[in-house]
Image 1 (cartoon, helix red, strand yellow):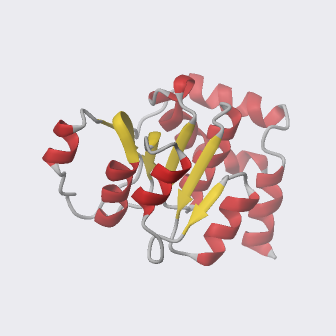
Image 2 (cartoon, rainbow, N blue to C red):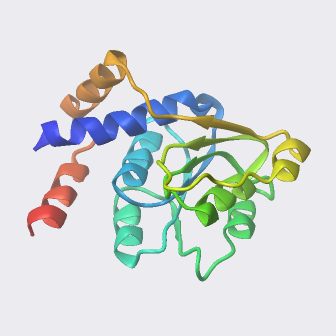
Length: 179
């Protein structure tokens, strides 16, 4: 069971370590699918204090809360940018992870991150996204991509699993997959 977790956790580990996570207090994760939920776990492992997840699926929102998201939002019912700002002293998230693969998710990540913050795009897209250059340039935000990982990432994740860091994740995935 643990072996099946290595690849998605490695994708998340690589994405988080490409971002400026060492100085981040607040993170926004847009999309609560398997990779987004793995990003939540990796952010926790890196000591991020506040992890906000925006997800349309009620079941995935419950998983995000179970896995350690401090705030879980439904983007259809809540203004993600306003909520993230209120949770971060009106600054916005330090880092954001776009894990939804849809334009509305990308827009939420870009608007939800603070001035000079970083959005890491982890999802794969069927269509090319549109980037709001005014938002990007006016607030000096950074956008990075994350798709490739190396052996060091695999080793870090295997060590983290062996240490028991993600003990709840295998149980949750087992219930979802087979329960």
